[in-house]
Image (tube, rainbow, N blue to C red; front, side, top):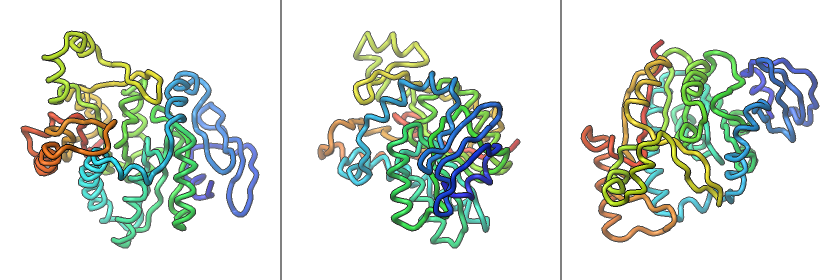
Length: 320
């Protein structure tokens, strides 16, 4: 772990081992909990939360980490083209500053991390980006990619959870959570409060949410009786790497209520898979699905369509 990341932490260093100007191993005390650095990677999950997230963590550890394979699936490629719209708008806001700090939650190997790094570099903005993921495997892959691209001085990765962030108050200019960390969080109100705490006033928060009232859900509500029982519950079980993990599907009112309590206001909204069905198990789209995907891309910001997506991406601004 690079030393610049230590300056962002709200922690007391108890002991450390430095190797080649890098903190290779350490024990830190943060807000009454002890966390550690192992083989250059910070693991910031307190013991109480580690027990609660053990099942989700083990499921995501089993998923093969291969960033180059993501482009093979046309469904993932379509999702990323809409992700890029939100990331472009976020980088436009950040480019007004000379120096920015960005936190990427649930980043995996770091698609949004490297995308924002390239955009900010092109605009001449100095940046520091911290990628956080629950699983260690993608964090290790992201760190190797960062080292290969010569970005370790400005990009770092760590293991952590959204509900407990070891950073100082108001240290980040932007936070992203576009790959579902809020869908798997066990305490959404605490997660929103933590994100608000580490974000500066006037900072931006870009996140995606699984939409309970999507066209996909409404079709299943009509077709399947078993789905109607699940629909009435705030959470459902989704299979990830052979394990069933608890996943939250959001109502628009729930998102806006939590955001308002955390001091956020909505800047923009995009819908993903509003018109085209989401089928991650398939790699190729049918011809009709490609036509629908094109229409989905051009209507993703339409007020009558965007709240019907399987995923809803929202850009918030912290006003309090």
